[in-house]
Amino acid sequence: MEKTDIKSLTIEELSLQLKELGFKSFRAKQIYQWLHEKLVESFDEMTNLSLGDRERLKENYRLVALKPVQVLVSKIDGTRKYLFSLGDGNVIESVWMQYKHGNSVCISSQVGCRMGCRFCASTLDGLERNLLPSEMLDQIYRIQRDTGERVSNVVVMGSGEPLDNYDNLVRFIRILSGEGGLNISQRNITVSTCGIVPGIRRLTEEGLSITLALSLHAPNDQVRKTLMPIANAYPLAEVLSACHEYFEKTGRRLTFEYSLVKGVNDNLEEASQLARLLKGQQGHVNLIPVNPIKERDFVQSNHQAIQAFKNLLEKNGINVTIRREMGRDINGACGQLRKSYLDHSAT
Ligand code: SAH
Image 1 (spheres, rainbow, N blue to C red):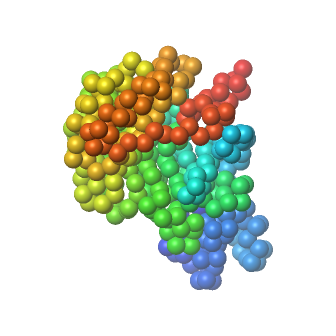
Image 2: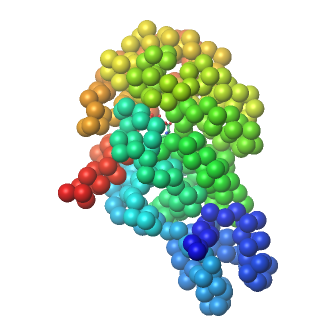
Image 3: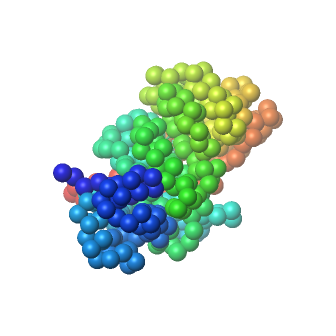
């Protein structure tokens, strides 16, 4: 029988299980603290437990700890890109970024992705599997251990569609923001989705106060369908109404991500259409100059076009930011590091 993944358990679940295994009642809190606050990689690091207790843990549980296979550090701004290997040999990537307001980690939620967005490298080989809560947490834990600096913000914007891995995502958020762990405020956690409407609706009822980011990328269904297959399943009217309900219920303003692709979604008519579309929505637009991937021939909009697009939105009363490119020298779009690693190791 496969051993239980101890790092994916909440403190309540762990307490219950340890009690059944005959551990003293105060041990659960200690063990939880070793896992989620001191961020250990093995049971042997739990030095205030007896050898017997450690053996008993090993007999019943497995401890998920990711191994860094590659770390790229930007000479420009210190951004660090990690390629981690999982227990089954799959690899995923995560990014650490330093901002004035603190350190932010961008994590993956799946190995690969099945959403098929045309400009995205993560989806080229489809979905391999979902990540466990422990595997999402450990991306942050390993990075905090490696840098020695506290992580204050987490964005679920790496490879994968978080709402396609819903239960593990919510469990991950509860452990990450809960007592006895890193205790990261839910307000500092952002989940980005391509717009799976039932997932957004479920999240609205979850009682969390995380920030939701919607990958919009087009001002109408017609253009959106050419970039994102998910647009065939959920029309924009439905997606935006679900987003509005999310705001109404949680009070959290949304982020609308819009990757600008030259000649595809970046003209001024599209900017004014976008402004009309977002009237009445509470949130802001984050413009992302598309990051070209070699498998597709999308081109980044030029600087003037991006600025003009931004100005027009602002003239229409929309809050806009242009995403700062972090770690330009080690970049590559989401999923590109993993992809080049896999292509390379296959030859
Ligand atoms: N599946 C989620 C989160 C992963 S991607 C989602 O769709 O939101 C995080 C953001 O990066 C999304 O807005 C995605 O559309 C965008 N993105 C992916 N590849 C990109 C690229 N090559 N250039 C610019 N943005 C990209």
